Length: 248
Image (cartoon, rainbow, N blue to C red; front, side, top):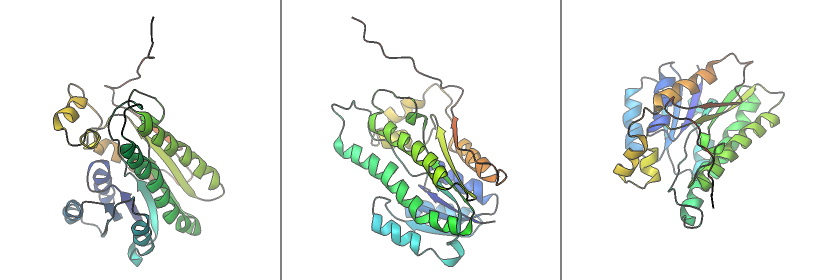
């Protein structure tokens, strides 16, 4: 059935993707920073699973982990490039440069490194599917979204450019662009402020991690002649903001 490599697999969308692909009997490479969570998840999933504990911003450790996958897991058929984060919602004049660096290092630099390590094998086998986790924030700006939105815009364009480079191969690339998903995302963004994080979703029905995992699985299980270039989805409780106007 093939190997599925999932980054950010210890919680949220990554964990839900692991469960969704395990239901199909797929072997899994789960990459994350929280070993205990991944070990507990692997025990639940009755499929072959290889765990990789690494901080994606450690490029040497990431390269080593990708280059030394056990033989049974070395031929990756699906990469779910899910790891990413937002930090803070301050405007650009007061935002933390450290937060900006962390978002760029994780959402952009680490993502392209994972692709670069996995892609040559897919091309050599002439099969595979890369699913990059984008966001509606890469299309629609909002106050405080500055660098986070910019990183997701990069992911969209990088995904489309990968498809251009891969013309003539059977390797597929999809940029998945969810709206609000109720996971630990806001807890991370607000640095553990549980009340502030809960207020983001209060009174509305956001998407769930399982919803996103089902869409990821759908895209990868379409006939091999079909490539979903980009797919945007939102909860029915979310729509588009109006323009900001500065009236005098």
